[in-house]
Amino acid sequence: MGAVEIPSLKATLVSGRTLGQGRGKVIGKFSEEYFRNVAICELNPEDLKSLGISPGQNVKITTKTGSVVVKSAIASQASQRGLIFMPYGPWVNMVIPSETYGTGMPSMKGIEAEVTAASDEKLLDLRTLVRHVTGEA
Amino acid sequence: MTILSKTIIPNVICTFCGSTCDDLQVTVEDEKVLSVRSGCSSSLSKYLNYNADRYLSPLVRKDGELRDATYDDAVCRSAEILANAKYPLLYGWSSTSNEASRAGIELAEWVGGVIDNTTTVCHGPTLLGVHDIGEVSASLGEIMHRADLVVYWGSNPVHSHPHHIMRYTSMSTGRFRLSKKNRTMVVVDVRRTDTAKLADQFIQITPNGDYELMCALRMAIRGDELEQDVISGVPAEKIEELAELMVSCQFGVIFFGLGLTMTQGRHRNVDVALSLVRDLNARTKFLIMPMRGHFNVAGANEVSAWVTGFPYAVDLSQGYPRYNPGDTTAVDVLVRGDCDAALVVASDPVASFPIEVSRHLAKIPVITIDPHPSATTPISEVVFPTTVVGIETGGCIYRMDGVAIMTRPVVSPPPGLHSDVEILRDILAHVKKLKAGQQA
Image (cartoon, rainbow over all chains, first blue to last red; front, top):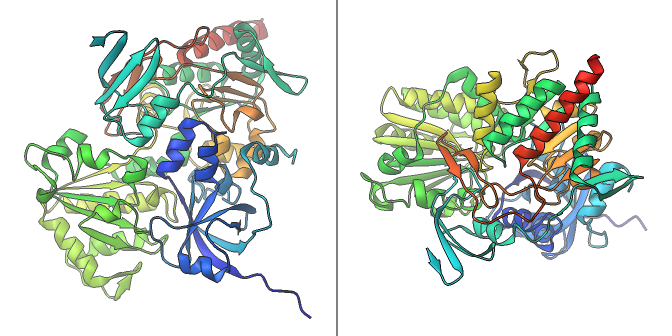
């Protein structure tokens, strides 16, 4: 019997500001509000279905830079199939490439990404994520 | 106005986003903010929670742990780090006052290295575009009174600048444009955002397609024929309709966001947007304005420009200002591993830079000056808690249209906390002593 193929989705990742992210960051970077609003990825409902998961289950976002596990959500601001959205913050930074092409600005929108279901994988809280930055985790 | 022990302070300047609304009504009692009226939900969150999670004493890393320290110890350690660094990065500045930016630039002049503000990962490409083409602009008041066509391009103000539409554009009451009926609002975006839902026309484009669409619009405005049927996901007829709408308005404005600056093309997207507006001014009156994010990011640019000649990414390591975005910008300096120390003021680079960039920051001594714990504080060598500009301390800030506004405190800070300006001046005084010793 061959290995079970995990459904995956080729997508364009756009990061951006949201009200929840803005509110969360002033309530506190280590607050539940910030974590709940920022460690997420919004997808088109059909795309979510194609991954075989329900909203709220974890997904893994992978780009050429790396990968991050976040909670999935149905896009509150409708996006077409193949477009995924993550709020600005430490979680999306895990998959954003650092090249600036001589401008000082990394590509934070319009990045090629792959999404896979990751229901069994854990979300990183901010403290653990910072340990990934320092190399302690 | 004081009712019993409560004081209601009118016309408070909001220090959340670049709109810097000046109509908050803040009720305080016993040096605590009880309620806020007229603010958006972001503003309310800020004013009601600013005191919830914060350090009340400076922290200095000892034996690998951040531990409480005296203010003097923290100043000495910071000065040592900066005075001994060969190429420090001084970063942040957009969520504090112009006075703090000015003090920061003076410190940068003494320690050398690079001083950069958060524009670098925000509207940096906008400034590069403006250097090339120039910008037709006005105050937000002018736009409120006169604009009959408002285009939000790659910007979602319902989420990023929640009262922008209500105070300055489509839903505001202007002298010559009384209501939404007198204005047309167009949104160009890759998603049907909550802002798009309020628009008279929504134009959905493919990601990274802004440059082509702007070029097509320029062609249509010149009267050239569009040879492709669909450009960046938009049918040619729709582009021609938008061109007609732009040419036939009396007073148009494009507000653009990071949808132009963070995508493929970056400053070239801004170049073409500015050129489009230049073309339009041959036919009608048209303006363009970036939607600046942090409440004083415009001020950080202005202060840097009037002191050093350049708005961001200024390298002072040679003893004179040098400006070469892509080389002297914070992300590039960090990715190359050039800098050997960093001072972070009113910013959270670990929450806003790609991980590879933050990884270098974590390897060097970082001094953080911020009112609140952030993703950057755990990697810091020294942490200064500070007062909150616009709530506990005053200072001058610039609104997104460059209008200078004086903020003022509404409550006193917790005892023992210093402002960004005081901390920077104290570090500078100590750096001067150390530098004098190094030269002796």
